[in-house]
Length: 122
Figure 1 (cartoon, rainbow, N blue to C red):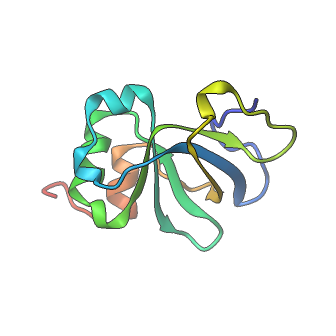
Figure 2 (cartoon, rainbow, N blue to C red):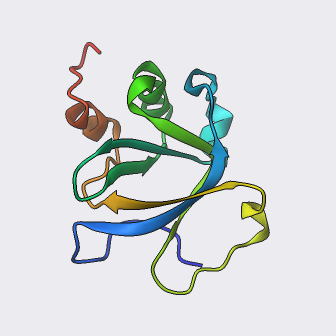
């Protein structure tokens, strides 16, 4: 199984498969969800979507505060759609979403603030 840890392609986007449980109410995300895996889909950049893993409480708080921009999946992971991908037991019963991910996707709170044009005061 190939798991996303960065972009290695020369293209401006890559295909990924998101496995997770769709979050109806983003405001209910918790710190436990960060540990279990939160994958968020945000703005379309034209060559692919802003798709990222939430890795800090600050990123989660930003997503919650600006929830109208985002779709979230909990207990989630991203698997590269290129090549031979195998499904393991942890993915059974979860939503599968195939998406073109921009190589410019957010990786930090700073990226989120710049991409969604939110100043330091919020």
